[in-house]
Image (cartoon, rainbow, N blue to C red):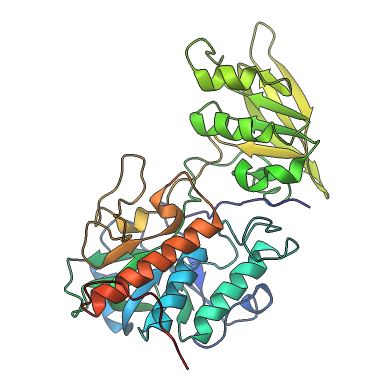
Length: 390
């Protein structure tokens, strides 16, 4: 079985789209219950990041207003861990989760590198347990999409942040950004979405061990693609490295190192056209090799790792606009306490765009942010290690 990551397709910039919202206050959502909940279709503003028209602002004023200590945007491992700790600290916590089944962890078929977890457990099962644990301690979990936030430097007392969803307006004394980094930079290749979770992956570090003695393809020639391809050489029988231009091994040590590996087959000046497969998953990738006589080939592979054009790990930040500072690579800028440039606003997990995109790291971020929030809201000079409930 394979552990495959999927993107969380963020709808920023889409025009005239509608989406479904569901909320759960008492019980945690599961794959089985999500579809049975009542839902309604709501038309969002034309663009995230644009100011909503006056009619929509009027509608916002008529919406439910929720006041809380901690509002968390994103229900992945980072967000759920943060909620667990803040709820245990007796801080009123609300999680706003676009969809519990589309994040990186939720799409992972098996978890093999999270401490204490049976290797047969799926990512969805682990995430369900994380969410349920947070809910049991009092977290208000709501399935809803955030399309805009407002925030200003807080003092730990006033409601200094506002989060807008189609269902409600949430006013919070602190805000946590935890939407992850599965955003897309361009449309996917044909077959890419279809076989997501069945052979298509964007994380060799996560999934490489599942392709031992298999043929895999890596598309892309940026640093991430080369590092991930190098990692795959530890497991795969052959790594087919597909690049749109000729790698310059004489100028790039990463390319030289990768090309020197005996189990790497390089396909220079080659375009990825399509991911092919059947009911069992990916069976190959169709490519077009440039030259005097361009020719299409189908390379038989079991895994397709895409790091250019169709795939990527772009932080999902469109709804934030320019409300906080960002790093040059697009990740949210934070300090060692996970605090952003705006006092009272924190960012955790893959939205920071670190090189360590792992579940255990995201959970660690959530814990750090929660303790920092408790310190901030309660005016402590130092963090409190944990909160004991009888």
